Length: 209
Ligand code: TYD
Image 1 (cartoon, rainbow, N blue to C red):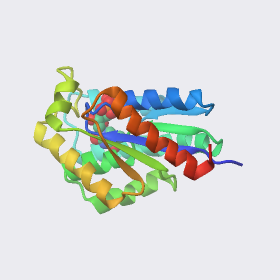
Image 2: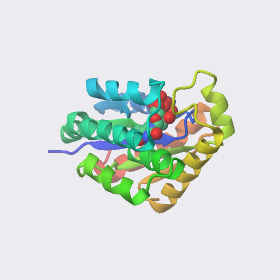
Image 3: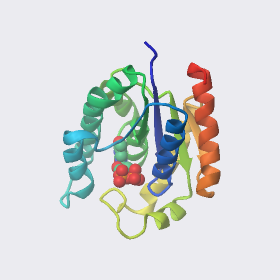
């Protein structure tokens, strides 16, 4: 059986990755691929409940509770949607995944990176992205794009988001084969040109086109 592809989209809040994901979906579907679009946190029924707690709960959530909630969401998501879809030969496009936990809970909140690597490993059960697209954008510009209607994570101060950005950049340096850096400070079309080139290269490498 032909195995599918798993591609994750990462970056600071407001970097434009969701727009690029939608354009990637349309492009791949036009080429005849069977595409599944999903996101973390919040795929499926349990995922949506976890998302509600993580992004819209007004009370205090401890850093460890937050970490486990993101990981619990991931474990359910991998088991129920990502793994079965990849096994069926589909192309899974996922808005945020393991690198978000490393950047936000690790580099920005200060949870131990090695611990997060171990927990991520348990949650993903061997499913690693074939490609991660990292949309890099200055955090001041990104925060302006987010606007005033911020959720719980987006409402944390700008220093936090700077740490997230730097965290992502160091992850990219550590895993340059998997994580491809894209300059998101450009028009949607220009950013998509970069996205498309990288995705096409992956498809050529993995399965021919
Ligand atoms: P979302 O509304 O999906 O934001 P975006 O459109 O920017 O992706 O909210 C997800 C938020 O959760 C975002 O601020 C990043 C954060 N997050 C973590 O802190 N850790 C994680 O593991 C994941 C998946 C997301």
